[in-house]
Image (cartoon, rainbow, N blue to C red; front, top):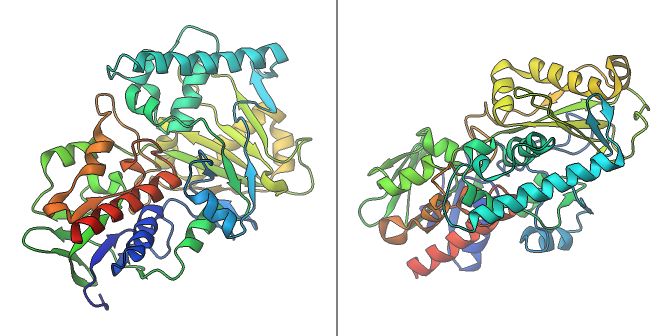
Length: 424
């Protein structure tokens, strides 16, 4: 692989791998980060070309900003941060083809509060179950709220999600957006680290006295290894382990599948902004059992594009159909608000469609625990194989901030500190 054998091999140069490598350096341990792709950042990736402005194809927010380890780093580096505020309020909330009244806005907000309160109350009993079984279902806004908190926020429907894990990892603090792009921040934090791009890992041997990491570009031997590949890749056998991983670790990986949140970005055709301000939010009430609305944010940072979000099974279905289907879905959704003619005039032809499901380096967006798998994150985070020299990290391993870039970074740092203690 063109480098001498290091103390530690870190597999993956996403936020977890970068956090791990940074922490290892602070402990005086030499490492190399092996990244299968042609860039750093993993699921935090800012595209600066497709829309003519920074566009985060993946992670977009510094969630729980007060506790997020990346917030002070972003400020120290001079990044421009914007407070998201409460994301439930919509500039337009569509109800039966018309904008909701103030009273209906209030009813929607109350339904959100009641939904979350019910989940927390049922979780307090300590019995895991599908999230959908613990929340209100009969109210006029309950299906809409379940779609928002499930498919859109969690990337998976509430009936596929562990109640206990959902409550344990729920995000309620300040959310900050990064004008330059969250992916840009993560890439900046990787500068100067020993990262080898286009260097996939196909097998990890962890018997004997050391760790052997193998791939098409050669073999490295190390005293320790931190694996940050997604649970989607691990469950699909993208990396082979010799010997095979213990059954509890394999079960934890299988119990933390990746959900999917896809984005469809449309470019403005001209100066028309549909009478809406920067960061305008659109959403609509669910209409029937098969209805899967998109959630929208228009003109972020005053830029000339709109971003539609679709998650869960609808996102997987659109991924199978391809980008043209996703664009058509997005335009049809916007037409509900403004009419097809206004949408055709306001937006240029074409779309930028994220493709995390199709990318073999990820195979999804971020993890959720299946019902009955509430302890899986702790099992994976605490796995200390080969006498503690082989460990796992990533957003799926964080028992509080799962699904976030800050959680991934912190998980990598935790794994690195534990490994440093083991290696002495």
